[in-house]
Image 1: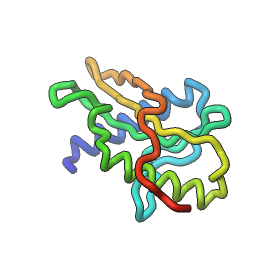
Image 2: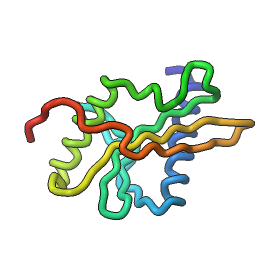
Image 3: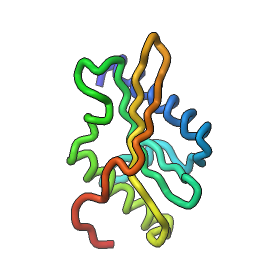
Image 4: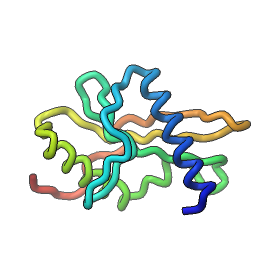
Length: 126
């Protein structure tokens, strides 16, 4: 990944965290990594654990940010989310998968939060 893309990714994630905090979410973890996958942000929205993928774009020239969350990426996030829930003994809690789509207009971020952007994909045994 180029330096420019890394900077965009980091900036988009910061904008998403600020938006989530301003919307009353409690940030639990950032960049949670496991051998099964990675989750950009894990947060609580009231009594629901939210696994949030952040996608940022300077323009929609190559599609909307949310369109970059492919089925493969959804599967990786699902695996990592289950690992987190199991590790923390939270398998009985409510959870959902959200996407924070960040676009920049005149250098300023605009965050669109897509709640329940996708469902748990695949058959997993835990």
